Length: 276
Image (cartoon, rainbow, N blue to C red; front, side, top):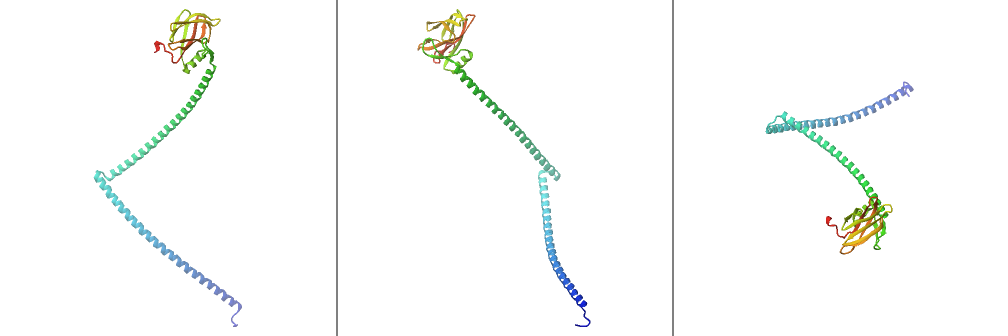
C-alpha cells in the first residue's frame, strides 16, 4: 500500500464511483424516457395533423354542401317566385302546422280513450243490470213454479177428469200464461143472461153467506143446470160439434147477487164470433 493512500481516501473513492454509477443509470433512463416521449409526441403530432386535414376536408365538404343548398334554395325560390326569407317563413309555417296536427291527434286520441273508458263503464253497468235481470227472472220462475204448485187439482162434476183451478186473480193469470186452455172471465148478476165465450150463462140464485149459487148454462141449444154449487168447484159439460170438455169455475159470490169466475175451454175449441 502506498504511503499516501489511507482507509478514508479509499472509502471516498468507492462512494464517488457509486454516485457516478447511479448518475449514469439515471442518465440512461432519462435518455430512454426522453426517446419514448419523443416517439409519442411524434405520433400525437401525426394524428393531430391527420385530424386537422380531416377537419379541413369536412369544412370544405360543409361549405360545398351549404353552397349547393343555397343554390337549390335559390332555384326553388326562382321556380316558386319566393325569396330565401319567404322560403324560411314557409318552412316554419309547415313545421307549425305539423305540430298543430300532432297536438290535434293527441287530443283526439285522448278523447277517444275517454269515450272508450266511458263505454267500458257503461258495458260493466249493463252487465250488472243483466245480472240483476237474470236474478229477477230466476226468482220469477221460482215464484211461478211455486204458484203452479199451489193450484188445486179437483175432479169435475161430470167426468173423472181432474183440472187445475184458479181460486183468485193471481192464480187465474198463471192459468192464462200456461197457454194450454182458453180462459174467459165473467161477472154475472142474478136474472141476467150473459154470453161468455161460445156459450151463455144465467145466474138463478146467489147465497153470499153460504158461498153457494145456482147457474144455468146454455150451450148448443141445451140447458145445463148447475144447482147449489160451491165456490171453486169445476162445473163441467160438453160443447161443440165434436164434443169438447168445457169447465166453469166461480170464485166469489157477492152480497149483491153477483158471481165472478171464468170459463175454461180447450185450445182447439171454437172461438167466439166477435173475436174471430
